[in-house]
Image (cartoon, rainbow, N blue to C red; front, side, top):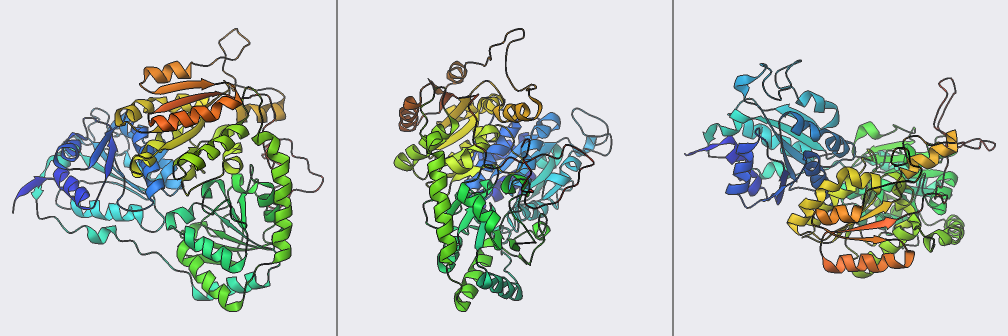
Length: 595
């Protein structure tokens, strides 16, 4: 029996487990681990410019793969580890599986307050910060048990509801010699998912059988479960129309006759109409956020509408609305069970209901056509998103498209038709600029396929330092930057509520005209191709050329700031502590002042 270091053992096991890529940044706390990964394995090691980029690349990688082998992240000590905290929170709340191997100081020096130690409340206590935003976070302090805890950490990240697991590795532990007779990691890569309770399935199907206006709404649980085909089989077997949340974008084919598109604040007319009129709702892999439900004003649950809720996480069942039937289950297994039971009892399409929704769809498409085809200059968001989807559908339909938060959240859900299952939105934490980095991970996960980020200028400026990484990796990334020199979605709402904006517009002190950096020049300086588009007719050719080049390219789009943007639902934020509130439709005489 030979001896190897803990770092070598972990690297060897990761390679044996089929790990394809590890993302990280060098710091004095993770030297041993990086040395082993880079020089002693065939795992691709991707060096980034900031630790948060590493986590977001892993995030994008997971969203494309949705299963083991996990993406691996390595960060290091003090501020380096702290840089990873915000995107780890995103990964936790959006069910993104990954393993973060964080270097920390040597155990010999714990609690002495050495360089970058988190010591005032406990020895090297950084992991305490992570407890609320990870599936598991701990420090390995014994070399003789570290491999066993590493394998359990790996298993935790991808089983059940996926999420990030953080394992802090002190520098001395990484370098300590242990026996090289490593365990078989195969059992720790297997995930067995929970199936629904049969009695619950029977009760759910009875509700669906008696419903006049049944309705399905799904979230990102479909993607993590791989339940795309199961959802399609259920819809076609029962004739029940399907809506998606922004996080569930692309879970159901948007050109299918039963597709209602997205619901919520920026939802389609037919999707939101169906939510308001449904008498039975089947929610799958979604927890009904305010964005998805118009601040809980779309559904009249439990009064006029009964809810059947399926989720792999029992803590999400009934969180926003009381359930008639709650099924703690994997989405695919739950849908398969419902399809079988519904077929047996004869659940069929309610033609009057689907005809009603078809009529609303026709009206909504006509009402929004002017936005999608607008020739205004600066450009309209709806024109840019619509043209992006059209180019991708023609040239590379399987490309990853990640759309960001901000004003893009008003258009990505309903004006970016998905040609594949890989149109993705970071739908809970809404971290600005997430898409700029996550598309690199998606490209790597798709054998360096094309990937597109749609984001605002404020978001791009926050995350632009990821561009050199794409240049070094020669990835075919296209960043479409909506340049209007303002935080538009905040600006619009503040003007509506207060009659003035605050800290939204970018301008040089003492000047009235809005100002912003030269994103073309900035991007070229970082090694990317770049072009500015100021006319609607020029956008499609610019995107086609960028995709054909297969080079990292920034398209800076001069976008409209003053034209009223799309919002399906305006709803009031509670601004008065003494006001009462309850979920449910707004009163008929209520005119929301703001969103």
